[in-house]
Length: 426
Image (tube, rainbow, N blue to C red; front, side, top):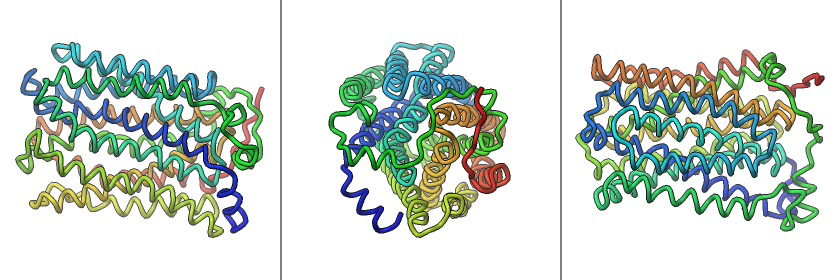
């Protein structure tokens, strides 16, 4: 953005950042609800006599539901809008999350996780749709980075809050108490959110700033047309490569720290907090960096890909995490890797809005999320097999360290210029 553009952005108004704050809060709640199983893994495994394969199967069914739900919610959000789509998603995942407190055995837990996966899959399609409605292209990566940082806040809150709730009230009540957050957020969302053109708190200058990009005709675009476009696969293959790594960190990292460094339910809290604080920084910096490069005159294509390449190199040292004997050195290496993941992800998430008409953004995000969830399903099975058969996390960390180079290569080969897609409509 040039200097004049920066002044226009500052003078336009700031209500769009209230929307980002809502998206940030929803994402934080989303991650508290999904990460609880990782934090409680040692407790639940002991209480229910789970093997690593049992735990992997529970994660697998969450991922399967996430794959189905992500694809469906992309279409739902495009059809009914971000406001109602988000409300439906939060309602489903909150009910399923609370249901965890009443389950017994692997099968019932897997069913509760399946319901949670269906609901939680709506978070990012609806959130990115909202950002597309409320922000011009040049601010979207930063806005997505900000609300995506809620994932790390949720991941920080979980190891601090959930062990205390579990020790004080038991793990079943911990699921019920944390479900209250979703109910409160849903009420706030329905009261506050409207599209910018319908919102009384949005000034005319801010609305003009939001709508400064060329308008796309709002005509539904079918999946059949989208999956025939290489740029859709660029996003989907990128998600397939990197999402399983984040799921691995989220669901297996507490258990890894416990086994490798002898930590328990209370003592692995500070290391996890440190890791996800670094992740939070990465989420914001990644979006800011590509925006800064664009402001300096770099093309969208170069800015996004250079940022992602830097992130891929930052993840690479995690390949050697298993061999690090010092806990806090390992925390630093893993924390930098998770920060780089979030920075990479913030830029990858912007590609649908960079390349596709607004009417297709939710659907493309849904297709990519489904691909990422399928990758997560495979990673869950792989992790369970590796840990039960050889008992070492080293192969898992090696996969994590190399995945981002593969993702960036796929994005570049399938979309060398990140050009806008013109889809012929019926």
